[in-house]
Image (cartoon, rainbow, N blue to C red; front, top):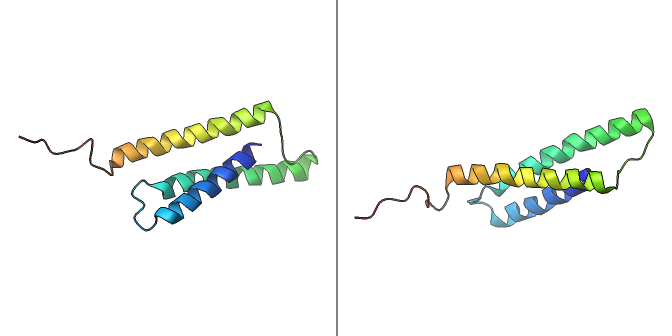
Length: 98
């Protein structure tokens, strides 16, 4: 299930990045790359496990869903830190008015 969740997040963030392009002010390309990296990593993991163990390709249970949601939250947290560091609206490093 975590593969499906991260693949869906990767598709949504890629679409949002494409719409907001070319400015990418909010670093949606970075968030998209986080989710695509996780998706590709788990796709390889699922394929290798399926080839070696001949088990289920998709795990659909509460633990797998929880892991998928945890990955979404972690990706959003990393993106938020990157966004705050870049400060696209210059809120954190605004000039002091006298």
